[in-house]
Length: 488
Image 1 (cartoon, rainbow, N blue to C red):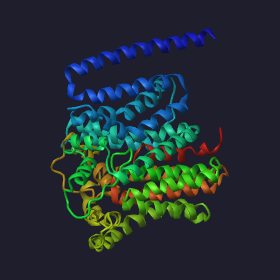
Image 2 (cartoon, rainbow, N blue to C red; image 1 turned 180 degrees about the vertical axis):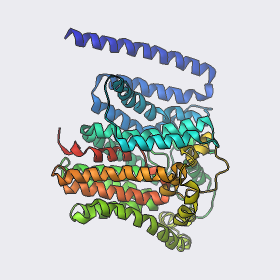
Image 3 (spheres, one colour; image 1 turned 60 degrees about the horizontal axis):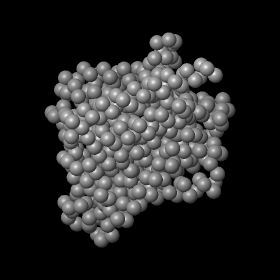
Image 4 (cartoon, rainbow, N blue to C red; image 1 turned 30 degrees about the horizontal axis):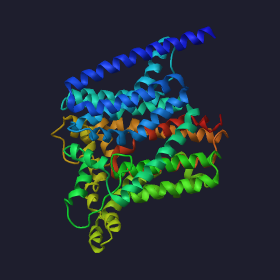
């Protein structure tokens, strides 16, 4: 009892000094960087709320905090611009919090633990991360800041696979968190769908329009840049309509996983699924629509017919999707004139296929680029998202990745990096299939895993690597440790 009190006292003292340090940093920031004070105030408020909760609660609640930050990060960073005269980049003081929290609360303890005793690490993940880190930091055509940003925002989240595999009992709290914020997401998106962007989106878009595509979409609606039928695609709590639709799809997947384990009653399962399908629909992102349909159909088949949940069939589907997506894009592009035949803004937006022109030609681009990228790639700092915000790689070919995650990873990691990534994903599903064959994983769960992988690979054919986020990596980690099906 005395030992516990002493330990709590040490935690309280550390917290006290942390709060003093944060206060001094805030005062210094206000004095030196007045145009960044909004970001620091919002970040500090979040840290003060979350720090005690993280210190005095168990591992599961730390997952709750992390996935809450992931769900709300894009929305909270927009609050920065309720303060007058804020720099556009001050939003990243808030945006970086989920990554900082993940590094300090999850990764740092693992590093410290490894100093005392060996830590079992996924070898496929280690080799892949090492190779991509090498490609990123040996690249000479980019900046130090871009390399650091790529490492933090694009490479570090892959470590969630290791964390999730080690903590499968977190599945229930993570699922509930994603479903809760997914519901808020759809509710806020529905408000935007009816009334357009709120004052929060308007101020944010005005401040960051020079480097944010999502902000440009808001401004395009407000000032009708392109003429014709003017329709606002809601972004909910997310950065843009695409990530809004993707979050709704991920929430649907975790809802189905809960149901497959009998952890969610049918009376709740049906209305919750309807909410997330509504979120997918009002996002008006066609690739999300198609991927959602694929997930539902494949999950239905994979949970009932063993063939669709066999490893070789799932991997064959990856190849077929890569080749067929190119033909589908060409086919749909021929109907781009349909948008002008209706005055209904929702239908006009849904029938606008003009952006497909950037997606066409992924297969030919892959084989054309392959000889030049057979070993090293350009590294993750070559990502369009990184270069647009942190500089570097100004001489890369325009639209070199064709918005296709396979072509992108060929450029970023070379043939070796691309193969390592695909092997990492393949081994995850094979591990889940092995658990099924041993009788420890239901076919219904294996079918949903297969459907999720196939639908995300399909989504990556038109939207690049943007689906490779914390939520996706958490799901992959569960496949490496399917004992999450055992109830606590």
